[in-house]
Amino acid sequence: MNETSKPVHGMWTSRWVFILAATGSAVGLGNIWRFPYITGEYGGGAFVLLYLACIALIGVPIMIAEVTLGRRGGLSPIHSMGRLAEQSKVSRRWKGIGYLGALSGFLILSFYSVVASWALIYVWEAVRGLFQGMTALQSQGNFEAMQANPWLMLGSHSLFMVLTMGVVALGVKRGLERAVEVLMPLLFVLLLVLIGYAATTPGFAQGVAFLFAFDFSKLSGEAVVIALGQAFFTLSLGMGAIMAYGAYMPREIKNKKTGRSRPVSIASSVAIIALLDTLVALGAGLAMFPLLFTGNLEPAQGPGMMFVTLPLAFGQMPGGVLFGSLFFVLVVCAAWTSSISLGEPMVAWLVERGKSRWAASLLVGGAAWVLGVGSVLSFNLWKEHTFLMGTFFDNIEFLSTSILLPLGGLLIALFAGWVMKETQVRKELAMKSFALYMVWRALVRIFSPLAMIAVIAYALWSATR
Ligand code: PHE
Ligand code: NA
Image 1: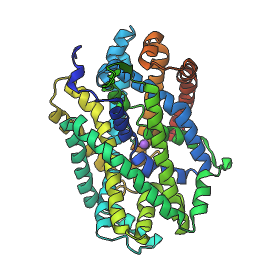
Image 2: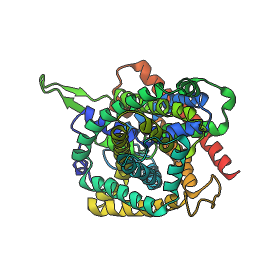
Image 3: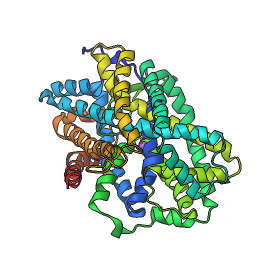
Image 4: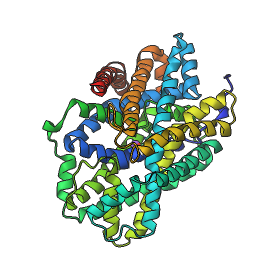
């Protein structure tokens, strides 16, 4: 690592490109697949409220902190943290934030690829018109049949991993910027079409009530753990993806007309990213729950929820073959822009250590692929082998999202709130409103760490119980 290593990975060309890339990382399976199914499992409205509180009070402040560390560090998370620790004259062990993040990213990438690969299989099924006229039970059966077939899932898991690491190997900037620009707005539009369809079904009112009626009797300690984990997962926090993307964010942008430089605000960029991410998650819930109730299916569908409900909509609506194919293509793309950001921190680190981007991508992708095979088998051959939180897949998911991400977030908050010099933080943040800055600071120094310590302790306790 040397002082000139910043251009190794390149910089985003503008603030908007940073916002787009970070939104590409944030909006993914976490919104369309994970949010609706855990909301179903944890009882609906009260959980949604808890989730929104976690986003606003913990997720947004931590995201601001993570981008700040990244932009200040300017390198892959591991090396950024090493550099920041040096600047702050504290132990180099703070690099551990980077290593921990790499581990989380690796674990998440392994199962993320498997779920994304279901969407890949569904593109093919949608194109062939398989969903036409399906009943709710048939749709459930169709999903189960796919899961019972390890070879099919192994094939699509391999394909998705190659797609992901291929882009990482090429370098994220060019291809990805363009892709995100076109695909994200399209995803929004299709989500609106699906909500529009859901509104015409008899279960709509019930679906809306399930999502937004707050029945607090359904809340539990476990729901709090899951809500916080989901807030981190959905915003790509606590594992260095956002730190890495922050490192490629310019500090100032020159206005082409006036020639004057303006600071690029971290806080307002983060607000936009979090808002978009939240809208997509709520939209996905609005599109799916009415279909469950219309088809007399249980809201607690588990990981199959999106794959059981949406085919019903496409099977009934006019133009369903076209919309269905397009929708699953977009889900794959949303997952793609996210999985790339899962691999990027590790690859950037290996590149800084002298590996070529290709070798680094091959290494990271290959290892994550192997671990992903365990997730593939969790749905068939290893289905009955459960321990701690459930199957192999359940355990990797719980460990990474409910324990490691909050732990990474906790350390990031402590570093930004207590370790770094305040003058440095303020300069990097360049927030216009002093009051808002003080609110952020209080959340990052005190509220978030305490909340996260409580949640991590509870998660560990509930996992070993
Ligand atoms: N935020 C992504 C999603 O919601 C998942 C993700 C987590 C991506 C962590 C990068 C890092 O799908
Ligand atoms: Na997300």
